[in-house]
Length: 70
Image (cartoon, rainbow, N blue to C red):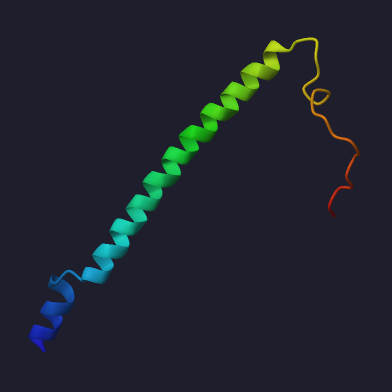
C-alpha cells in the first residue's frame, strides 16, 4: 500500500505534464494574439481619430442595410 501511495503522490504523470505544457503553450498563443489585436485596435482608433470631419461609418461601403439578428 505504501508503494501505491508513493507512486500516486510522488511520481509525475507524463500525461499530466504533457497537458500542462500544452495549456502553457495555448496561454502564450492567446497572449500574443491579444497583443496583436490590441495593436490593431489602437491603429484603427488612431485612424478614426485622424478623420475628424469624416464619419468612420460613412466610409464603409455597404450596398444595403442588413437586418439585425434577434
